[in-house]
Amino acid sequence: MISWGHDECIYKQLIMTKKHWVGPNGETAIIPKDEGLGIMISGLHLHEFGFGLQMTKEELKKVNEL
Image (cartoon, rainbow, N blue to C red; front, side, top):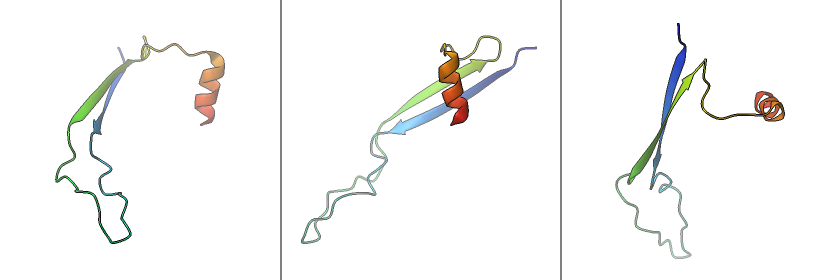
């Protein structure tokens, strides 16, 4: 049996448009109606082969502490 996992994340261009500066007279930037273009990052992890990244024992210890 092969154990595997899959995860993905989408980064949007304009996701932080709800936060913006307000000028002294109340003026603000024009806020777009959508979140803009996105980039999807997808990863596949196989228990037998890992994620493709090699870690030292010190790095693994830091990750596990977090």
